[in-house]
Amino acid sequence: MGTKASKLPKDLLSEYQVKTSCLLRYNELLAGEDRHLPSPRVPMSKILTLPELKSNPFRKRICYVFSTSELRDGSLTFEDFLDLLSAFSDSATLEIKSHYAFRIFDFDDDGTLDPGDLEMLVNCLTGDTEDTRLTPEEMRQLINNILEESDIDKDGTVNLSEFQHVISRSPDFVR
Image 1 (cartoon, one colour):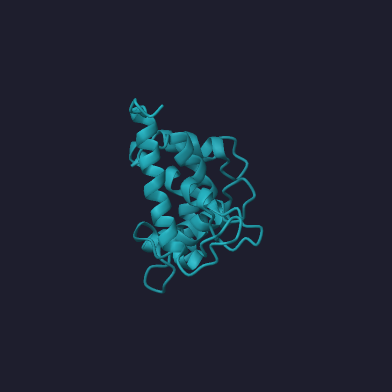
Image 2 (image 1 turned 90 degrees about the vertical axis):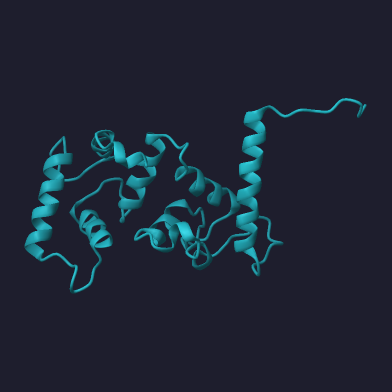
């Protein structure tokens, strides 16, 4: 006993290193929060300070989508934090990335991207200021173009499979 060195397979060692790195980052964010709870949560306000999210126009929506909080406050447990980081990692599949992108863009959480979701998405991307806001006619035309291109079943909304079909034709999406 103890005379042989144990070896972890490379894939397990790599996974262990990633989780350890994530745990260290999570614990930095958790500083000052109540760590003694069975499942401590980092508030959304601290998650939003991460450099990767700081300038993302969907940063709050990302927190809401990955949060398992019953309060719907965007706070994250360590497991939520791991899910967020893994979905945005280079190793995440197109299916995973498109699934979460769809959920992030589905602002009303009804399982479809309707004209209201598309307008909010465009406003997030262009900015909703006087200088950047599209005119009502420009917005209507853009939403009509998006639906014309994406709404395969012509029901006036884009569902997950339609969204994934559009994304599959965009190699830049995975990056």
